[in-house]
Image (tube, rainbow over all chains, first blue to last red; front, side, top):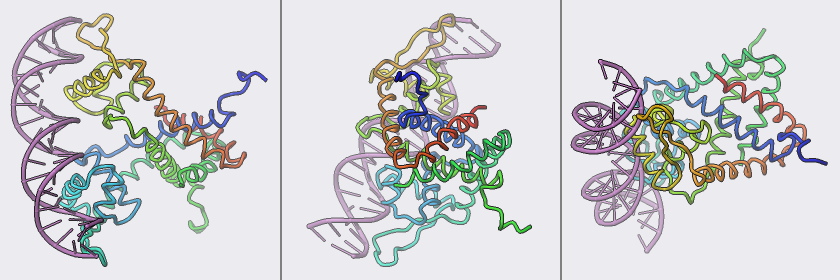
Length: 149
Length: 149
DNA sequence: TATTGTTATACTCTATAACTATA
DNA sequence: TATAGTTATAGAGTATAACAATA
């Protein structure tokens, strides 16, 4: 049984390769659909999105998530505080800890970013055939499953 | 006709939302599967991957692609030169231009990173049903199409 | 005269070490 | 004594401006 008769995507390794390429490429394209007018650094944006996904987090949690040291996260959070995008709250029981969460303004910033991505994506989706869109409808929850640890 | 009877993913906007979430989440998970032992900065890695995707590029091309200024790209490229991951070559006709390309060492670095992503992904794929894998096989080329401008 | 890339300089970001407050 | 976070200081990264080489 000659290997050359088996298309790449018929094997699990081949499918993994095809999925890596297509998912990483599309995510790169989506990430570029961000609002150019905002004056936020890459890490500032990353912190907002992390808070949007995970809800309120401590400085230490945020530092670990973004893979920076706590003093750097203190600075990043302070700049977001000055812009009114996040707020600080005391921890319920442990007074050493500071809980960081999105303000309504901060939430609107990431919502706007999501909206821009979806507008771009929706425009590309109407160019597909109904059959192709149907495949993506079935694929979306499977992609979600892959991300779950 | 009550809107609540229409599942989100039945509409194009709903499908766009589902695709944005699942693709961005999976890409984030894949990006985290990088080799922790390498001492490369985020932008240094980004340059290597860009060269791996696009082939040899000029300093100016790289700067535009990574959205940094040319002097910054000169520095980043110099650090990659010192590590032996990229090389400089004269342009065929325009002697102002410098072509930057991957060395075999640089190519092996990104190949290793891709391999790690695909090993992780392949492990997740075997946990799916054959029918689910079949859907992904059909979805991969469609995701590719969406990325094309 | 315009374009590509580098050098000079200042500013921003991040890290390590030391410190404060709390557990 | 250990942990969460901040402040102080130094190093790395990035930008703007000025410059050199080439088109």
